[in-house]
Image (cartoon, rainbow, N blue to C red; front, side, top):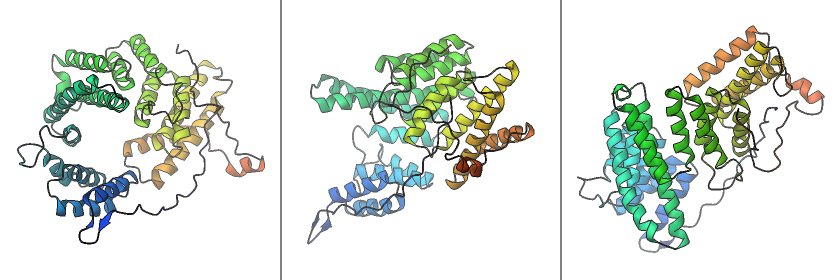
Length: 382
């Protein structure tokens, strides 16, 4: 199986902003300002979004949607303390807080309180309680919109439950050493699978727990079920898990030395975003481990020698390093591991492919995985 190839992205063109609905006396309406601020957040133009959000809050200081967008924009610009205050303003005892408050505020605060795991757990649970009540109303509805909302509610509840599991399993907290930690994680995952039996995040989290319990066969079964649920979906299918979930699946595959499904999942990720730093890192790491395995056994993997696999690893890691620098990516430990792997490849005499030589041959020398269709293919995990 060859490496995927980064595609040159066309430069994005600025589009004319949508006209704001205005009145001669009052200027843009709050609804128009909200719509504009939301579109700017989607475009990741957080600084400009903040200007619109503050205009809304000047007119309606208690506007809950504007407060939530304020928190999001501040969080994305690195103003975490101000973002926390914005989300807290949506909760009691603030007199302007709605009843019930938006569960999203609790979910953001759970992530912002990672230094206080028990407070983070409380926020996750508060969000779960609110969402569970709202889900019951959606379950009784019969229209298509409510059914779509129900699926989103279930997915959000599962993410909150998974977030609690991750806190309980985190070795940097004392919670993981408590006697009931394993049982608590099992119960939380059982709740998640009861809410959404085939949810990939829940199944992957269960696989992580099984791996921590030294039960690799059970972990493999969970991962196979998680992947099977979506591997044949088109890339634009809304049921496809988000890229971070798929990359987490790749990490779990690699921990179990399941290299072929890992590469197939990575191929799908790169078809969606070939500038994804972590995807290039994981692909390079995957080829590196495949090269080590081929070298130890004296054989080949997918008809590739250990030197060819090592060359693929080197090229992926070099691409990762460039993207990491260009994007000013915040994950420093990832870059340190990339440098460590490149150092080992240097010691083996493995150098990057010569782009000039590739151009002379009429192509870039990168063997594409067959991308006919969006399926990741049927691969038996052994």
